[in-house]
Image (cartoon, rainbow, N blue to C red; front, side, top):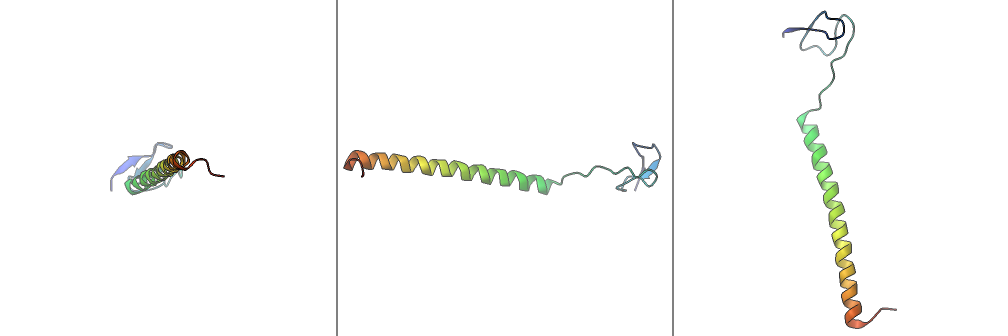
Length: 75
């Protein structure tokens, strides 16, 4: 536990303290590595789902065209 100076009032405060005991300035919170990894994984999952959905649609359209070419248009 070391002492540091408050950027707001300039008085000494503990480096472990979340806020200055003199003026109430709050130290900004940091986002943990676990949260960052969770957000990135979520984004990857959503993008993967959207890509797979589009590939499935394209595959279905291709199959429909092949069926139409082989059997003629459906009614």
